[in-house]
Image (tube, rainbow, N blue to C red; front, side):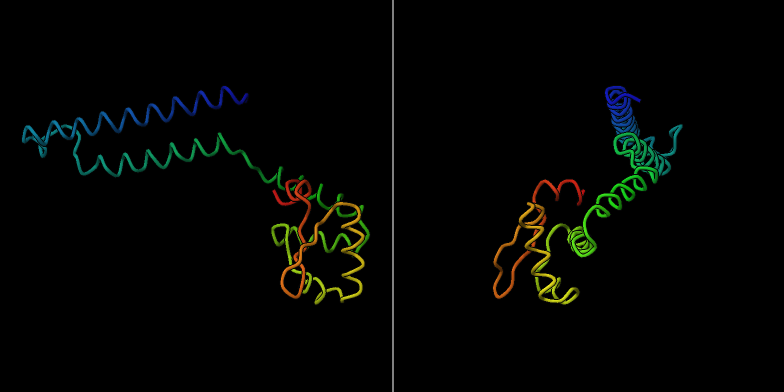
Length: 156
């Protein structure tokens, strides 16, 4: 479905829901002010759960239409990441994977505890020279961050 059509359907749904809630509020207010709240055609105590349920339904439909994430998309993303990380040598791929798991940044100490100090230093330098990561001083260690472009691609 085209995006403009989806937006139009969402606007119609939300407008209809708001109109329904407004009309129901007016209906209840009128019957309360007339003193006929107990004898009205639509029982007022049923109106609140009905509108709440309708709100959940409308919200679910709007979410489904505006944010279509399916398992197929997630599986495609996982496969693309495996291919991308497969291009890197093993140690570099593992470090980039750890960075992805930590939202694009991690301390050098954490990497050193897994890979060893020398291997970590050399791998970080190779990735830094290619522009994949950035290294910033942080106390007695460094913060290793994915470059902004790679962060947008890998951590989305």
